[in-house]
Picture 1 (tube, one colour):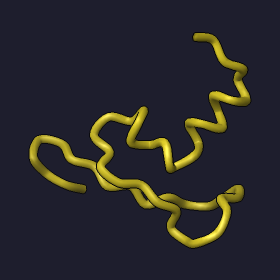
Picture 2: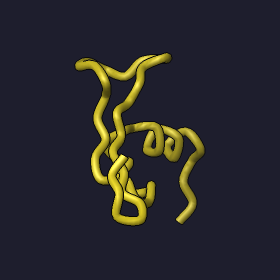
Picture 3: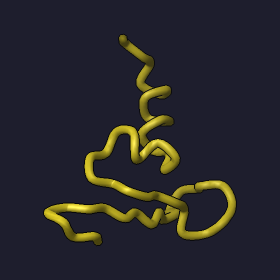
Picture 4: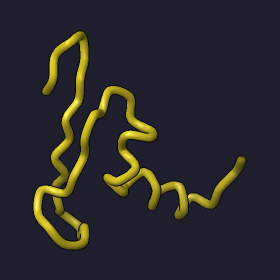
Length: 53
């Protein structure tokens, strides 16, 4: 299914969707409460080869 670029970008930059499209990610959340703005950071946890990082 083809989607507009803006819609795809909005999906992939929303940390709530990280688990759906990024392999190995087990959790994802904004580093600070509130809306994401330019320069905001996200805390992600992943598993690879039995290790969590």
